Length: 94
Length: 468
Image (cartoon, rainbow over all chains, first blue to last red; front, side):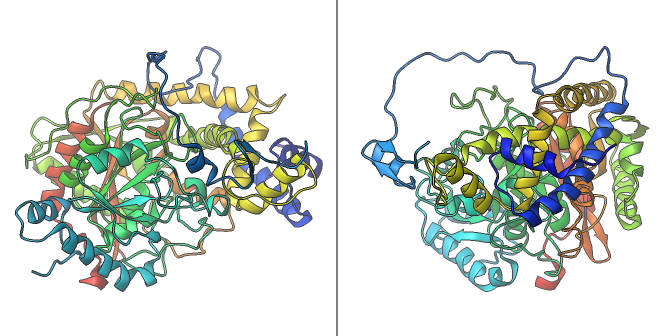
């Protein structure tokens, strides 16, 4: 299997919202290539008639009554927030 | 009376408190003293509680499980300052029984690893030999229970994070059937695999703790009703049909000392009345690791998207929103989460989804079917838990693919949603060897019965030799 390129590492990092240093890019290019080569083994089997498994239990939907209840106290929740403006989380401009 | 935390089981500790021979506070203090004495060397704990409320015995909690008012970092800098505002359901269940949190235990960052070396706060050390790893990701809980720093603990297991550390530290750990224990309030890694489970010094404690934490939870829609837990008492294995998958007992890299200890345990099982027969999982072992390392990173890449510096956790500066998010995630995540996020993102990205994720999900079906077929003929399947005994700190950290192979024997049953339990079955080079017992879905009682009888017959001393 072809090794992944530097551009592919940067593309994936951007999709995943990760800023990488130049050193990281070189290191991950090597390591991700090794990992992807190892996991490509999944394509060796003939799976034409096999359905996918997303979840190991044979349960479908789980229903619950739609009953309103109190939410967590806002001051408790905002205690973990990096920045707050009233009842909003504040972030840099989009 | 003095409490020997190295030898005290949770059952006996509970009896001491119930009968008034030791107060709950005295017992809690005895474990704090043990932590003060031995944890500087082991680094099992990321946070020690001075005095958690409750009238019962202590419990250590892996730091991926949310505890109200007690820091919960998941071993990551990105959650270094995070203090949950509610208890995970498993914690609420423990509190209902009077259990007192004694501390939060070290883990590979976001439970991603097999050695705790990926913790942002430094590795834990194996109580049998501190130059070696305690396994992972739940190495902190394992080291704590092994070294008598807690009578028992909770762990979490995605591909082996309870069973493998239990093997490397020489005690009992159960990964329960998927869906039997709530994940509400637990830091998510790979949601179709994650399970919380008990870590204990013996099988009866393990079974009891499983009864405390298991059951349907309206806050986790993947949970189901669970059969009543039976605490094991029988000392024979009459009628038990044990299957020995040849691939799981013959895979490359199993150390001779590990094979020998497992072989001896199987002979004991036969002498206790079990039938032992070789069987086969032709593709599960060969393809399990590859399947797992597509599915779990894919799910992780989605679950870890929430760490964006907005609502909780670390935030780094950035001129605009996107830059802030990217800098926060670069500064907050260590190398292993970054690797897995990127592998997962790649496997889910346009053009690669069918080749990787969809294909891995089909392989998962193959693995599940192979196990289902064996449970038509067998009650439990047995193998080593880890191909090796505890390895030296630093030995595999620069080679992710070699590190991933630590889980080759624990992963297949995880992919199939099956329960698996580790008991220690002997020593190799002075280090514990773990025996893995796998059951059918909801087969915990059968596993407990088998493991308890074997435990009695093996007579393994769970106290590390150097601490006796």
